[in-house]
Length: 365
Ligand code: AMP
Ligand code: MG
Image (cartoon, rainbow, N blue to C red; front, side, top):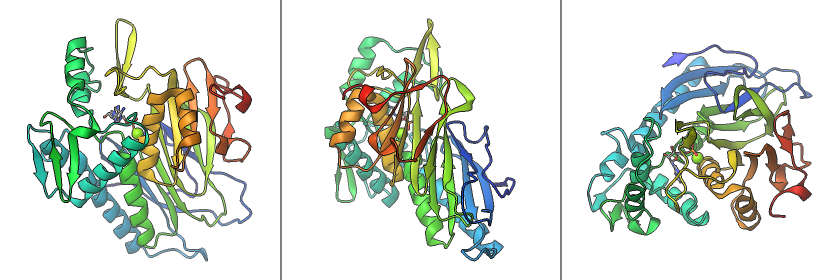
C-alpha cells in the first residue's frame, strides 16, 4: 500500500484519475476545510484512490488507527472483489467459470451478487449491457492491440453469447452452453465502488470518496459544506474537462472510445462492443458519463448508454425505472444532458470543443 499526499482540498491528479477529475469547490458557507486521509494502490487493472474524511462533524480529528483500519479493509475488499470477478487471473472465479464447464457450484457471495446485478441490468438495458461477452472480448483482444478478427470468427463467437445461456440456480451458476464466457469488466469497478463506500460509511468515516479508474463514488457531508466537484474529461485532451458535475452523493462512471483501443488501417477499434454486431459500438458517441445512486448501475449504464447512442439512450432514460443521469459527448461535437442535469445546477458545461445542445435540439425529442 502506498500512502499519497494528504491535502485539505481535492487535487486534480491527472495520472490517477484520467477520466474524471476532482476539484475543490469554494462556494460553501462553512469555513472548516475538508481534510483527507488518502490511500492509493493498483488493482482491477487501474489506479484506485480511497479518500477518507479525517475530521468529524465538530471538526475534531478522527483517530488515526480508525482511518488506517478502514483504508486497509477497503483495500482488502477491492482485492477480494478482483479475485472473484477477474476473467484474466487464473486464480479468478470468472476465469474458472469461463473454462469449458457446465456449472460452478458454490461461487462466492461476491460473484453471485455481481452476476445477479449484472444480469438484472442486462435485462433492463435490453442487452446493450451484456456480461456474457467474455469470448468476444478475448477475440478482439483490444488491450493486447488487436488485430481485427475475421468476420466469421466474430459471428461464430456471438453464437455463444447471451443471457439465456447462463443462469443462477440457488447457489450454482449453470451454463447451458459450456462455451459461454462472462466478462464483468463493464460493471466490476462500479460494483467495487459501491461496496467500498458502504464499508467506509459502516466504519464510521463521515465523508469521502473512492475512485477506481473512470468510476467515482462520494458520500457524506463535508465540514466545509461544499459539494463534490467532478470534472468530465475531454475525450481528446487528457488534461482538460468539458464540464463539471456537482454531487452530494452517489457514483459517476465514464465509458469512452479513448480509454482502450487499437488502430488498424487508420480506423479506431475500441473496447466497448455492440452485442448485436460483435464489433466496437458505432453509436456516434465519444463518451458517456453516467451518475446513479448505485455504483454498479452507474458503471453498467455508462457502457450500455455508449452502445445505445443518444437517441436510444434518451428514450431509455424516459422509460426506465432506474435512477440515473447522463452526459453524452457525440463524435460531431455535441454535448447532450439528460433532463435531471438541465437547469438544476448539478452540471456546468465548460467546453470549447463540445457544444451544449438545448433540450429542444436534442436528437430523439
Ligand atoms: P466500461 O469501460 O465500463 O464501459 O467497460 C468496458 C469493458 O466492459 C470492456 O473492456 C469489456 O471488458 C466489457 N464490455 C465491452 N462491451 C460490453 C457490453 N456491451 N456490455 C458489457 N460489458 C462490455
Ligand atoms: Mg461500465
